[in-house]
Image (tube, rainbow, N blue to C red; front, side, top):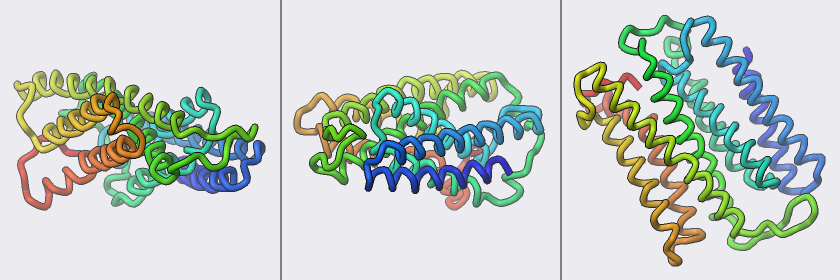
Length: 271
């Protein structure tokens, strides 16, 4: 119930952000932010309630992890909106969050059911590994939304509530900040995953499909952080790399499990 209401509120927030982008009226922008905050709060309450019912952190399957990823994307965006004091990225960022939320809500009923924690997941490394990875992915999702803003607008039409121009340089800097925020968290997620693998399976790295694509994701954003210093790759080119990078994130999260099932690859990761 709470998660369904949160999903509906995020749709409302997205539509109000669209209205704000068209009108530029301050009260519409505040309404969009308010709806996003309430939706995020309901999602928080829903995840807490699910965790209390299950007796463990809601991080054990694709449904729960997808909802936590939505939670992280919205949280990172609202923090950036507070410091940036602009709302023009609200539509694409919430669209990214809604894409992930829709994926979660169309999962089969058996995946959405509250179940006891599997013995293999009864480790403190579960929370550390999954949460740090999700913070990284959430920041990359926000960066992708900003990248879409940069790709759509060659110049800076419109402005903020005071009529000041929305400078593309500000979008670029905020996008780079989001990538720079997410990268160390993803690094921590990979390192803690390796330690957990050593404790559980007796090896730090086994070139499991999930591990391999996590490394591909890490290398992609490492490339983004390096090429941003090159003049010829700044602006729209860098934005394109950031948007494609989140496509790699989604493939790592959604595509790899599908590929493992379809091609019948060996994998020790359930999601």
